Structure formats: C-alpha cells, structure tokens
Length: 321
Ligand SMILES: C[C@@](O)(CCOP(=O)(O)OP(=O)(O)O)CC(=O)O
Ligand SMILES: [Mg+2]
Image (cartoon, rainbow, N blue to C red):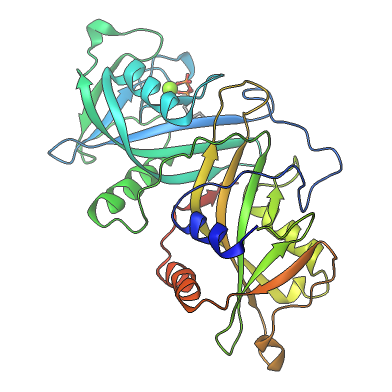
C-alpha cells in the first residue's frame, strides 16, 4: 500500500476498497440491511430560475397536506442517486439529476440522510389532478409566503444548498459506486505538531493503511472516530479534541440487498491537544500495536491536506440528536 497515493485518491474524491480487517470493531461485525438495521433517506433541493425551491404536498395521513422537500426512504437494490431521482419523480413529477451532495446527516448509526442539490432534466410539475399516495401536488416556494411545513428541519437543508449554489465551498461530490457491507469511516486522521509537521494515523494490520472506524449500534458515524482514537491512544484521549472536519467522498453500491447496503465515509478528522506545552510538538503516544504515526514528508501533499482543513473544504456531516 502506498500511503501518499491513497491519500491523493481520497483528496480527489475517489474511493478505496474497504478492508475486511477493521481497526476498531467488535469481533463480529454484522452486515447492515436496508430498512432493517439501517435507514437511508434521500432528499433533493431544486431551485428554479427565480430562486424558488421545489416543494411537495404530503398525502400521508400523519402529515396530510403539509409541505416538504421531495424526500423519502431508499429502497432495496437502489443507488443513492437512483433513490433521489425516484423520489423527485414520484413526489414532484420532474426528472432530475444531481449537481452535488451538499449535506449528510446522521441520527444514531441507523439513520442517515443524503441531501442533494439537483436540477431538472425533464417531466412537469405534479398537479392536484395527479395526486396519489406519494404526494398531493408539487409547487415552487419563494420561502417567504406562508406554507405549512411537515418539518422545519428542511430549512437548514435549503439554506445549505442555497449557500453552496452561491459559493461552492467543497468540490462537487457524488456517491462513489463501491461496495461496503457495514457503515464505516475511512479516516484521514491528522495531527499537526506545533513545529508544522503533519502526521497521519495509519492502521498496520497486514499492511499499512488509512484506518477504518466502524460505526456500531451504540455509536454514531462521527463518534466512531472517537472510539478509534480512544483505542489507539487511551492515555492522551481526554487531552485531545477529535474534530470531524467533513467528508471527502462517500462510497456506496446497494445493488445486493443485505450484502452491499453499507457505506464508507472518507472523512478528515483532525486531532488537537486541548492544552499547551512542549508535548504539543509531538503527536500523542500510540499505545496499540495496531496503529502508528506516519510523517507526511511530501511538502505538496502536506500543503494540500492542510489547505483543505484550513478552508473547511469538505462535504459536511452533521449528527442530529
Ligand atoms: C426525513 C423524513 O421525513 C424523510 C421523508 O420520508 P417519507 O416519509 O417521505 O418517506 P417516503 O414515503 O419514502 O417518501 C422521514 C424521517 O426519517 O424523518
Ligand atoms: Mg416522501
């Protein structure tokens, strides 16, 4: 394994195969099964030329006639983009294509929402005459006129998409079609010492690799990085900030229900000492034979990683509680 090549791939939004060996996972890691042990939600923010956002009126009994973004639960065998396009077509009448993912949200390790900024490629606005179980109708909303919303949670999604549309702050991100059977993070876990040296945490099972943190029942995705750091450097853990900066890429296939329903977030996490003093010039002591620090000697690669962290140029991942 060539560390620099793998890091370059992640920085370019490419994927890496997920090893069978996990750096931090219970002995028996179960494959996730869509709609049984994991729920994926897709949602699309679509604007028209007047900056109005596409909304759908719900037909479900528990939110009847309330308005929401086109959204819904992924179905078995779908890719993330196929699910998003299906929900927009069913609920709003339009064909669309993704421009980019703009936000990933998680609520515990068993609910993850993928939010796209998308654009129309065909079809027509669903009218009341076409009302069915998927939705009553769709309309363009100027975000000022009163609308009874199914949930105010979508305001943050619309705001994020609007901000990205005005000033993109991360590269366009599309799901990478690669198989995974569990929900994991491939970590680009960095430590910048006070003398400007950049270190990466590597797993060293079989061969050197960027570590994989598995999200298990009790931990959210973002918490998985904490559990890995706790395992690698327990004595320093409480003197460190484990800062999940965001996603470089998201790997999912979904074609084989029960076997490829998992996903891998390629995530940048930075470690910072909470205190000060001479110890901050060195990375925290590794206390597990499964990990080691890797010094980034290549100045271009070091600067590329540090620049992404400084500018926050990542697809955001938010944990909802
Ligand atoms: C975040 C959601 O509101 C997403 C929308 O889910 P729907 O209830 O619309 O699902 P479908 O029937 O598949 O369209 C649900 C939730 O998990 O809170
Ligand atoms: Mg829906």
